Amino acid sequence: MKNKKAIYLLFLANIISGIAQGISMLAIPWYFAEVSRTDFFWNFYLIITFLTLFWGVYAGTLVDRYCRKKLFIIVNCICGLLIGSIALTGLYSNLEINYSDFLVVSVFAVTIFNYNVHYPNLYAFGQEITEKKYYGNLNSYIEVQGQVTSVLAGAFAAILLTGTENQILEIGGIKFNLPLDIQKWNIYEIFLLDAITYLFVILIFSLIRYTSISTDKKHKEGIINRLKGGFLFLKGEPVIFVFGLASYMLFAFTLVEIHVLLPDYVKKFLLSEGNVFASAEIYYSFGAIFSGLMIIRLFKNIKTVFAVIILMSTATLSYYFLTYIDILWYFFLANFVIGITNAGVRILRTTYIFHHVPNNLIGRTNSVFGTLNIVVRMLLIGILSFSFFQTSDNIRYGFIVGLGLMLVSISVLIIWSKRIVGSENIAN
Image (tube, helix red, strand yellow):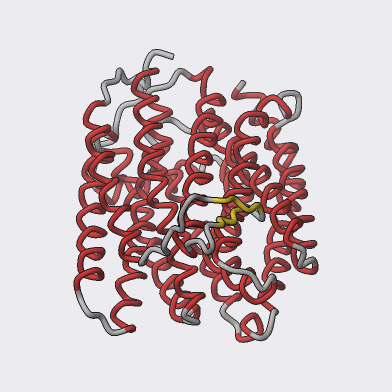
């Protein structure tokens, strides 16, 4: 790899910001589950998701138009200032509960909007500075470093959300004896930690030096024409569109599962506390790390579409059993399996997209997929907001909703499999 040092710095920045952001994004839904305000959070999550429809499409034009390194720096400056201001306001003001709830959900909104630029920019930048033969390795490395970060975030979140009693720390169902007790952190203290990490990330990005390998010319036309670029490209490439969208559905449900389904599932069905919720992220991340290390090797002799079908089918089985089994060890095992399948599909899907989409269109193309993904997530959040899922332990039936989505997506992939395989043969 020609830009190995730049890639290492990119990963380092991603790890540092990912830990603090990960803690915040676990702490926020659990905060609302604890104070029995999940309806407030779900309603705002639906609004935030709707707003990202427009922001996500525009974000793709920024990724394809401007220097990706500078875009990272600018976005991190804005997010760091916003979250830092919210953290200080929360810490040093005597807030009424409604105003406090609004500030907490605002951090969630800022982070979601950041993700809509960060991840398309991360993959586009990685594609820009990496030789084509290393695309599969790059996406595996991104997955591994991202999930190692999630393991650390989950572990810290398990500690900070509940603290310890009698010098005993419980993470992932395992108890650890400590020399002292750790106090539970205030939600705004977690946000302040999050804001501080943005400063370190900005410094790291400023140190990145690289040589662009992509020879694709950046599109500098007006915003309307740039917005059209991704749609027009996919309109002419229906196979890429169908595979890219259908294989994205597992990721769509996983996001809704983490932020909407799991907090109440842990509290109402498993009858457990915040450390169990945070530990689920740890087991999920271990599964994703395994996927990052092994998935390319395991499926090297299998066409991408069939590998994706196998992984999505495995996730479907996990959803079915999560609906009916309230045993803690199975909950952790299922999250481990879902980590393997979701990360595996993401690696295989992204590698396929890299091989079929030019670098000067990658941001806008991913934005089209991201926009449609958002629409699906809005529908999922809307369904899970029905009063049925709020009654007793009925939240567990939310996994049946995910199961149905996977079956539809798998069916589409099977129907289109011959054409998807044909396009893959041409690209190779």
